[in-house]
Length: 340
Image 1 (cartoon, rainbow, N blue to C red):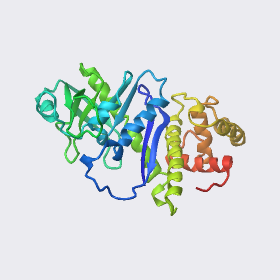
Image 2 (tube, one colour):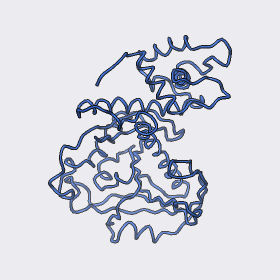
Image 3 (spheres, one colour):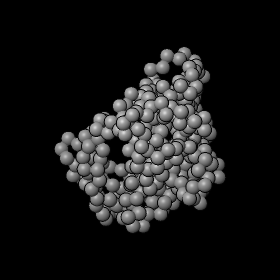
């Protein structure tokens, strides 16, 4: 069972705006034709292109869209098909692409000089401690050469992209050094342009949080006992929406970005939130929902209370597990028991 999902994140604030597309599927059998000989439409990697198209259709009113991929999204057909007038692609490099003017991507990067430095904060994760990283950066422009078998007909001979490489040249002992080689269709001319690209790529961590929320830190979807692929596909689709909402609630719990509740909940769910909110208000000021009504922060307070949070500011703020529990109870109150 595989899931390929796309989320919208505000480029300036980092606020999760919701899901914009995706696909859930199962592998029925192993491919009999070698990967490099198959058309793109017959490869699982086609999801990078089709899901990006879905997202761009949902976000058609956006001033600019940057599709951010991990290494698996670094292939020539994606660089050729996805970018448009207001749509850019940003991916971590996976391949040492051949270049139109000769040589390879890695050779061109190695010839560039480091031109700037910065210190960034690395948040704590399961596989590392939180720390500061001293990064050196270099940038440049190359033209990727079309491979012999791109998987799609009539692609251009080359695609112009900018590269930004950030390297932790002197990491602390026992720490894995940071090394990102990023490719993008955005023009990158100055160091400020390059650091902006780095900051946007860092937002990709939100999609990792989505999968963690689906698995180990929330819904534990991999422990499902459903015995049919159809039922499991439906379950994964529903769970993905819930996991995305949990991320939005965690972001909103402190009332910073005043995102409207319509970004997260349906009209019927909003009416239910209003009714539930009345039943959760305590007698003291500390036990009241002080967030502006009809914002995600307001909804986060309600869901957290349903999940067992006490509501006292002096206590630990609600986390993903609390919000998952609150969402489970909320959906039971609104929709009743359900089967998939």
